[in-house]
Amino acid sequence: MSAHPPLRVVIVHWNQPDSCVDTVGRFRDRELPVRVTVVDNGSEPDALGELRAGLGRFPGDEVELVEVGRNAGFGPGANAGLQRFLEQPDDGDWVALAPHDVDPWPGCLAAMLDAAAVEPMAGLMCADVGDGMVPVIDPYFGGMAVEAPVSPTALPLPRWENVDYPHGTLMLLRRACLAEIGMFDERYFSYCEEADLALRARRNGWRVGLVRGARVQNLHIGSGMAIVDYLQTRNTLLLVQEMSGWYHAFIRAWFTIVQTVRGVWRPGTRALIFHPRARLAGIRDFALRRFGPPPASMMRPPTRPGADAISTPGS
Image 1 (cartoon, one colour):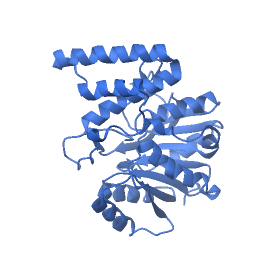
Image 2: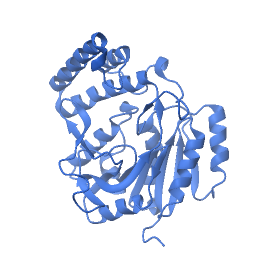
Image 3: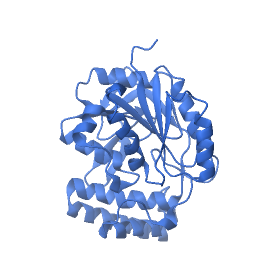
Image 4: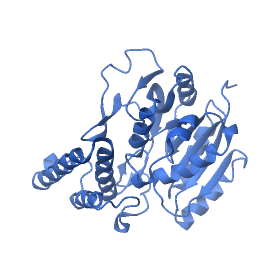
């Protein structure tokens, strides 16, 4: 029997009903009792019908479905679930947040809560995806991951590590922290919203951590390359400008332009995610202050597992 009270879990879903139902089942089959809120971000009618039918096999008092009615983005969709958590004080101090295709390994959730119990000012934290990296925020480059200075296995596991921001594969957010700093900035739609939230938390004295050894796996989330590159470009510029000012954002934009030109002329230098027109559109829309949903031409339902897609945790 778990010593922890039931944990509210918010899962953001879009057009992957089978994966989402499987994810709900995994959370319910772990070491903690959970109550699950699935937020549907405007899935297509057939996918939404499959999701309703799949969730119907779980007890109604343990799993609920919130229908946003449009693809609002990961941050706004998460906010719909987080708001319900904030309105229910019986849900406890912590809420978990994940996309629709993750696997929290046995012991992950309990390890995270145990780590937070000895960190009185813990406000946000994430699980360990097993890559040995540390999430940091650079004043010019925004959110990024760097190699951990100490080998992840050099010290006892699980353990709390201070980081600049929590990744979106599996986050835990404290009620008091959300009540003080607010929820996700919906201008971001998807990508960089976790870094922005962490900056606000840390400015208010909250600690942000990664619980090393509390393992989670991002099984598959597919997004088109154009929309990923567009959102990463636009939102990184917004994050840098909000954090460090316009000069830093200008330098970042100029670097992106140079990097894009080089990638066009020298394909061997391209990053995994590379779409020149989408990058330039991201710079343009940042300059024009066009935030929120990306252009309609870039929006499409995610591919089914196994298809050609970019794996993007938290999108």
